[in-house]
Length: 431
Image (cartoon, rainbow, N blue to C red; front, top):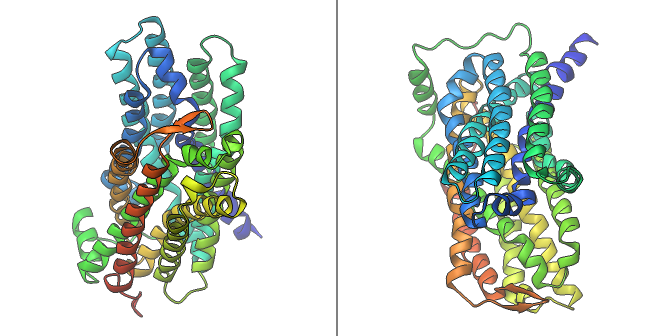
């Protein structure tokens, strides 16, 4: 009974506390326009804060993966402090920008606070509980990591309506007051997670001559092309997911569902979380976990092709069948985006073992960093430079541009499928 309690108290609960806190980074779209208006800058200029947050998430995970491997208590404490500090700093610079409109200092301060400082908290907080969960749930590693990472995805669905209510309920200056309050709330949640997070008793870390030698030696146990394939297909899946998700609101408006955009966003966030849990649990039952990626890419290719061939975005308004196709695309891409995340640590552990998994997982999350800089920007570039903006149900939208985004993502998904089939080796018997 004690072992069962420890499994949840020392593994699953702290993981959820950490991931449900840092996952609120995806609530950015809820308040980005309010920040831009309050400090006197364009939304495009402010948007870079989110891109920097995702970039530094991946890079901090890559560079601090060795620390996580060595000491999860230190890494989870760093995550708690930096995430809360970055959020509070964001609130301070929003306040400063409100008193000093068009101040470059306020914009740069938001970049540093939300992007760099919070990014460190995101990367270390994301990594810290993952290996611990796989050690506690050895027979169901996918289910365990999927549960925690689902918390990261579900955070948006849980926090978005709360943040929206706070923005209106806190009155004048609600935007910076909200950040102060959330900084306190999330610090408490993450600090509790930090205090109770622990690896199973008796687990002894494998001894290596040095951190780098241990990682390199582990990667060399399989052809390096296999790892490159994992990194690239992870990068492509995130890039395509971000490209489509970043245009989700306008795509929904094009098919005449603008009034339900908020509800659809919440449902898509639940699909994101469900994909993290469902695809991971499913992968536990497969002989080769890479099979789940082939399934994700197949579903993504089929759903995008259907919308492309039917021109669902341009012709969907008033057509129930086409609207269903477009919604199915949004939900499937969200589920595959989440499932791609949650299966990476377990796929790596299947191939390389548990010895240096936090460090290797951290390096692999650098793909997330670069995708954070390329996914949204790629979609924005395509929409801006192809097609044309027209009046669609009272808003300026570019249906042809959104369709062209799908053409590019379909090609990229096909490349990822080829990588999964031909470059990533099947799991070795030794692993």
